[in-house]
Length: 152
Image (cartoon, rainbow, N blue to C red; front, top):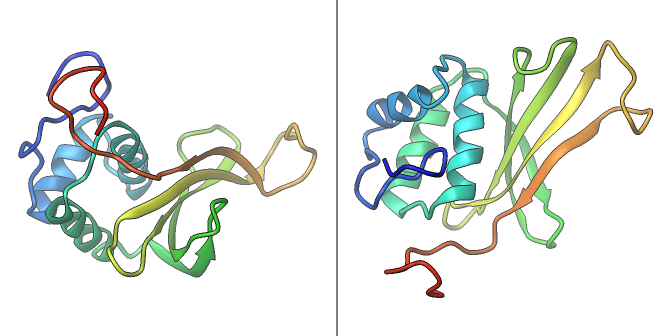
């Protein structure tokens, strides 16, 4: 892993074996839960391209977690439809229950967006109502380049 960004792996460094990949992802934040896995995936998707074989391993490992739920078909803020999956996070924010959500393209399985939503809170939230989106990221394109400043 390169220094600088939180979890930048070079091409070929991530395992395509679901169990090994999960172990790699969970070591980043000393995590053990499915919510920790979602946090790692949210970071991964924001920092580097994910190869189809890596994404296949991600989907297989998510399928093995009983606390990953399908929320059905959804539409992102770019108007794209996909399959939305989520898990509850009761550990990241004291007094709050978060949902960590990732939507995948139905034809390729690649991520289209991810978000973190407060669904329950012991304290008032800034908008005054729940659910409240804490973080939202649209994933449009990602590619490796040979050097900094080069465009894909």
